[in-house]
Picture (cartoon, rainbow, N blue to C red):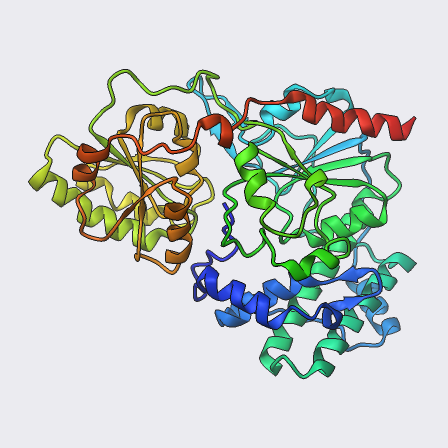
Length: 470
């Protein structure tokens, strides 16, 4: 899911407000465009952090220094250039694992994709040390950047500085907002340098990764080096997204705004959602099908569903979920004592202790690597706010309920109801009564959301890369 705004240390800004910022503050792209580079997404990130007063995001930058001093500083603080060998296709592993019944750890996003590729022509790169997914190497984001700055890097530095000058001269941003914008460009520039050195002088033709937002440095480096950038869908995409389904003004700048060359989505439904926006042309969006790892390819509802309510929690939004479970369990004991509650944690949840405190209530707690499919086969009701798991439940005979008015993401939750993927559930409302009235809430065919896995879509990427190399 698009969880770029779920930061427990900052103020949550509702998606509707963020999109209003995008439309009202960033519609004049001339302010943040320099040469062939448009810094739309770093600007978005900066305004999001500024609107939530996320001061912990602010970093020291050196854009005010003369270029020679900037280069000297990086020489003093830098390290050796990376030494490695990459193959023609690079997969940037997200390190999201699923543990099967044999205790084997599988890559949630790339296990099936890699199974249909010629593995001898692929390098899998983990984004962090300690990644449990199979990988060939690690790109350590904490390692010192190389000492020497090339002409390409100096050119990008000048574009970042020009963008900052234009932002200041526009008079449209406060001094505080300027600090956040400078921080976002600082993060972008360092990422650009790291990826440029990582991929330069390598035979790489295609890079698969996710998501496109917060990966502008990677996309820019790939573009400079002539490497095709391919995003794979990694979660929910909704009309209310901040980094998807962009307004019309983006169509004229999308070729400069560091969007990927191509995006592969789960099914026709997601392509239709993306086509409401203007960041991609129709030919850039392809259907890869359900490439997520499943232990069984037969995804069906159990013959006898249990009186079980699944709470599918989302990353770092623990407060509304924990509060709701503390209300729900006593309510069920009083009015529906045969019903039980299971809580599935998000794979990247940081505040596990908050959920562990629910165990004394008799709640089933399923950790970050547990398989969702098994829970969907068992449960009769799923409750979440706006998770992708609402779509995962299609075909499992589950009643999807979206918690309304319980968090700063109420506008996103309302989208789930408008899309017809879930029924609204208000605080204090009886979910079992809704189930007795409605049964399953599936309004879309699963194949619309998760088309059959199309290995040809991924093999074609490798074949086109081989053609270029030839």
